[in-house]
Length: 279
DNA sequence: CGGCAGGTGCGGA
DNA sequence: TCCGCACCTGCC
Image (cartoon, rainbow, N blue to C red; front, side, top):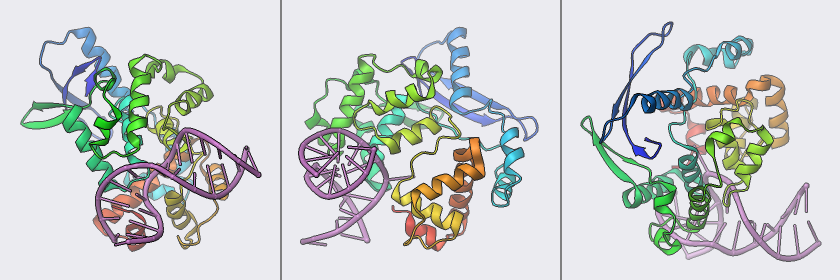
């Protein structure tokens, strides 16, 4: 993780129980970090991993739903986490667009190997992201050599916006929802699908579900209506039903059910799901 | 080897 | 506001 420009190695360890949860964080850095820095870092980790999120009201409502209740039991305590910064998530979102997972990973690997910082700590080695300043000024052709294709333009324009200080992640956290949405949509290469993921994952809007892409439509049609993925339920109908059923928690509810389904299939493959997930 | 993928911007209706 | 289309690249 980078925090305030400093590349850090983090090691998070379980240090509690379900009833009395706790996390130990070991911080590795090239130079000494003062107390104020560590306090701010701790606050940021709590934010990014949603460690202070009170799930009780969600569970209270969700236990009344016959499909959601068993998922809540299996995943009690689970909260979404987005370990990276807004800028880092935007880069990942761009790399995910119009590509299968395997190719997204390949593009991300090439970008990190070229522009990231390899950090070795605790017997491990991971890449930290580059800063917007470090990548601004790189030519589009140089990025295209990494086989990111037309995404090079989006990566550069988003990078320039951050390098020039046009986007303030912390100001956006405090901004009104519609202003936040508009600021994200203003970024070149960032459209409704990416914004939906970002408002949920990065800005923790648990009711953010306004866009369902075709691949999600097929999965939700089967998951919620047991409908043949080849003949999916219209997006408008899906949005309406999920809103009525899960209200202000609707995207968190979908997240719980999606994780439950995905990991169930990881242990014991679910044929229809395997077919719908491209690798 | 054509078609399409965990989208988006753009031009035209 | 909506719709069709092009777009890098890799893989089925």
